Amino acid sequence: MEWSIVLRSSGESAELVLLGTAGGPRPQPERAGIASALRVGEALYLVDLGYGACRQLTLAGFGFERLRAGFVTHLHSDHIADLGNLLLYGWYAGLCEVPRPVRLFGPGPRPPYRDPGAAGLPGFTETLRRLLHAYATDIEDRIIDNARRPPEEVLDGTDIPLPDSLGFDPRTRVAPDMEPLAVYRDEHVEVSAILVQHAPMAPAFAFRFDTAHGSVVFSGDTGPCANLVRLAHGADVLVHEVIDEHWIQRSYSGANDPVAAAMFAHHTTAHTSIPDAGRIAAECGARTLVLTHFVPGHNPAPRWHEAADTFGGRLVVGADLDRIPLR
Image (cartoon, rainbow, N blue to C red; front, side, top):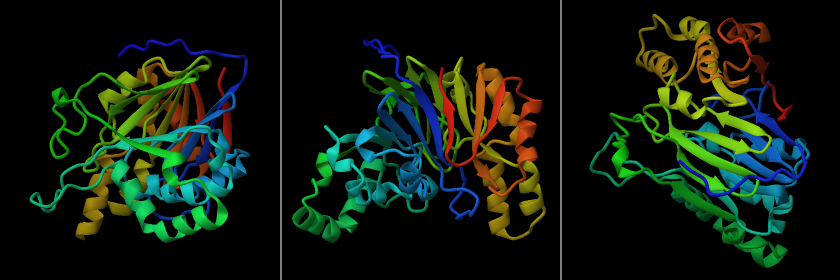
């Protein structure tokens, strides 16, 4: 993967902001839904839109007019719960002032698992379109009565294409060995993506942001995965999901009902334990490991700090609205 532009640094600062750090679709009083922002100068980039993300963006002091682009790792509800609110509430918090539509990127469609003969399941772009259609009455009234700009003038959704040569299959090969895919670039960032292991949810992506101030990688939801190690090689900051493996054992191991068995299988294969998060950061050569997407969100902090047993670099146990400067 090669880029034809040179990133510019005007001397302005850059920072990672953890908007929400909760994992899973269950509301947690301690943490908002998973969402992060990367600010480079005055430009702002979003990764995932969990519940409360738009409110958290406001609490962080950001106006929506600063948004350049957003990136959705996968289509689980806890990562897109605020997608509709990006328009519905952003409209009144600066989104109408963006000079060009905010570029939004996410996974493409996939065939259904339960009924292979049925129509395909919507990808990111179609999901956004259907959300806007669901709110069409409100949207039309806001355009007419409040002089809001139409959605297509402020948001531009795009599915991330996968080359046929990858051999991706949502049932059998969700994260084939691959090189990162170029997704987006402007004068501040270069963004690349790679498939990760979050079966049966597929496609699921991790994203890397390269800037003049350093590189930041977002794992998305994934079990240990060679593709992620490749994407995050030499990263300044690795923002990685984490799940407490002891909690999984206490909660689901030995249970006889099918729901518990399914939850145990999912948590142990599609997510990353505390020691494995540290090992992955060490293997990548990341300088800083930032833990987020905590399951369970109410764990005592010392438990998460045990990632330092397998990672010798700087460890940040994330909390909502934490700000982590880049160099």
